[in-house]
Length: 187
Image 1 (cartoon, rainbow, N blue to C red):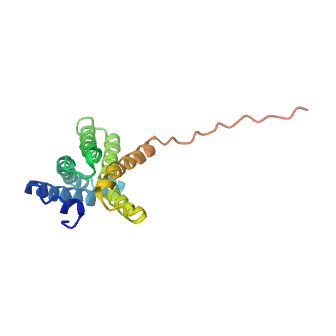
Image 2 (spheres, helix red, strand yellow):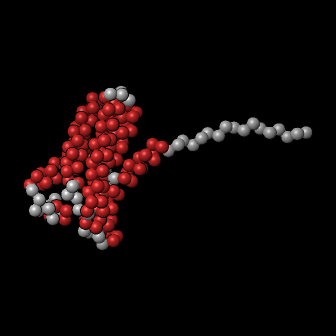
Image 3 (tube, helix red, strand yellow):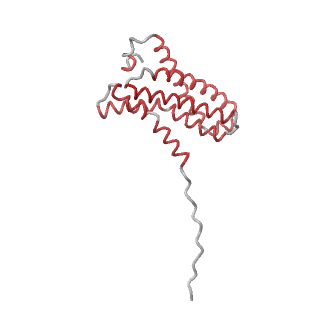
């Protein structure tokens, strides 16, 4: 990880930054690795205790990842716009987890819980989209300096993910057309 430009340029920062970076990478990585399992309907219905256990671990990883992500956002490359983008991602990540947990623990609403967890996992997947967009910026435009790319990628890595999920939630089912009464020919 030290050979990444955004890490190697941080040599003057205190050791706390590197510790927080590792905590963020490990916790978010575990969340990313296990979160998709929660989307498997069969697992949720046939093994609710396994679903709950994975949920506890996932939630803890997201809390750690979100808090450390918020700290790291203050040091993000790309100026205040990137810092704001990564900070907003961390806050949205924590907020969506909170709403999900509230919907199942307090409101006992599994459908709402599921919708909030899908939003949350879409935000978790920002780790993937960030790397895709960073690679595309380098390959397509020759942009490798995170001071240039993170201005846009700090937002692009998560906002479209969330918009995609919201579009899926709000996709209206096609209205069924009522059959028209047959017109009888006049004789």
